[in-house]
Image (cartoon, rainbow, N blue to C red):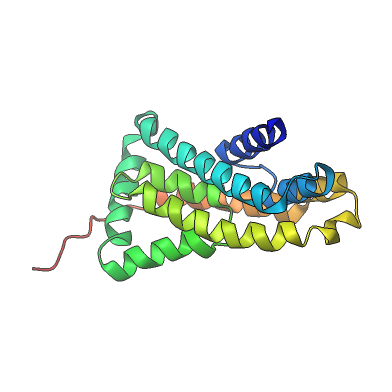
Length: 188
């Protein structure tokens, strides 16, 4: 039981980081190979910890958005009116959180800044997507067993592609908030 609590705390902490955390699936695969935890329990723990971490990240960004430049927050709020202007847009936003191959940290940070975006449905979509992802990757952890976990972890943090993706996602978040969005007004 202590091992599960430790796994939860590590995964939660990783998903609370705003950038540059290793992919959760790599850490879960490592735990599957080294701790001998019942794989379904490990997967559920990972999904709950990652989802709780991302919810907390979005909530922190929402709580402290007043620390950001006012023009940035206004631009993000105006962008949110476009993301939620129709049911199709709202569904597309949920789908993005469900299947996004992108780093989800910046997606949750943006959602946290945008008060018009409900965080709970995004977390539920994220959890559903991660349940599938973690099930596939953790049960397929034998591929990772053929290499050193340290090498896999280090490569995920230091590869030029991983660094470039994190920097690009951070830049996209900054750019999104600096676009002078006009609020979407419903058509009467």
